[in-house]
Image (tube, rainbow, N blue to C red):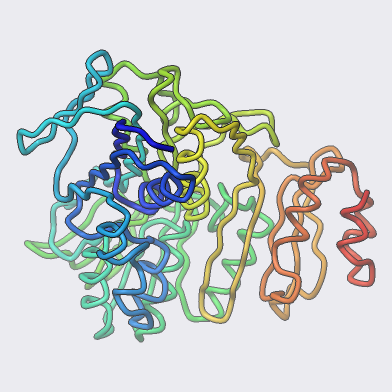
Length: 411
């Protein structure tokens, strides 16, 4: 494809790097400019709360591509620059350093930012949020020597950092306003499983509790909760979720509703502007609704799909969401989607006590989501096959390890 057009990607993370890769692999030989607010090369975020935080992965391993790749594929990197304005009429971006960049097609993949707690003492030293490579490095230095750690939030970041802190020998307390960890992601049944895992490893779970203040003079010394407790803390890790970085889209007048609104081809209402990754609220034909997904696989696959869509290919992005976690001796993969509380039942197949099982979420008898714990021989593929089947399955056969999942997926 010979062209003099310039495609600009705002957001130099996994989704942005994969979109650039996709454009080149599909034969686009025009200009590609990748703009990112961080000074690092595009990197993957899962290691920040897993292997890299634990010192088990080298920094070079987290990068999507090495520096030579961008040079060899004529991808211009503009790093350490924030895009401050998008003029869709003139197809021009303004940077905080004073520069301007014109585009023929634009992909917005600015990702998300941690939600900050607005309580007294939030400015104290010793509080850590985890989003960037630098955040992970600073947190690793803080927890590697042990100490008392309070984790605020029992979502994925909260539990993974709690597990890392325990592996470093820290005393760990987790404060979570819901009745079980991961309730929004997994519901109460499987949230309770992860509560069991952390209790077995010595974590003090304070569930159904809100943080009311961080206490200390200059540096945090305790976390106050709504039941009057003061939890001693040398280090506080805040994992209170993220918010999509939609500011640029709002400024430019693009439709924003829980993220940037895009269709199944990841295109906004502006035919020359696309969005993917954490920030995209995309219509998923598999579920018949819009879904915004904040996980690694969505950035990876969404970036690749967006690159093809920008080239005018017939793209339908209908993958079931996927994510994974590693906590202590538990490795888990999950795929699928359901609205909070939006399922009828959970079917377990295997040995939950031995931490080797599948769990399936059913709606109207159909599998809408599923996960496995430590069952790597078959992995997550059978779950995705059952989701795509879209037909009712017999719960008794689904729970029976003697019935091959592949047979159930045939309908």
